[in-house]
Length: 143
Image (cartoon, rainbow, N blue to C red):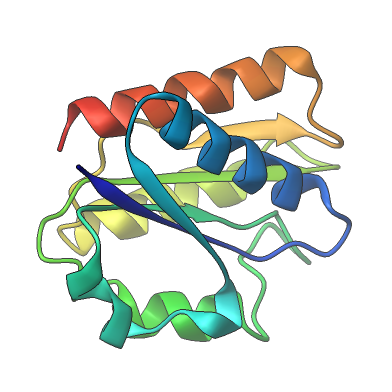
């Protein structure tokens, strides 16, 4: 049975809602998922999982949260062992540029992205949550 790590940071609860939905979708598709807040995950956890979902909202000037998420992601991004990975997060202003930048960074690092990053505006509505469920299914298909 495939095992997925869902690692996120959330300030308002919007990205957390997406992360929790992702975990439920993985389980609904017959696989295991474990939810981590960014500060709880490190490269020591990587070997325990077959795939990864990283979630972080847009912060500041369209960037990743720099107190916990960015340091964690910087530590693990070159150690994911070509395992399928997806990115997701929420935003409340601008156009989601942080996700495009994050995707490019991941590609440049050789991360095996299973799909384009998923963004949700503000509090994820049912349409956004359906997209989260579809992203989970896509990730599982790539394992």
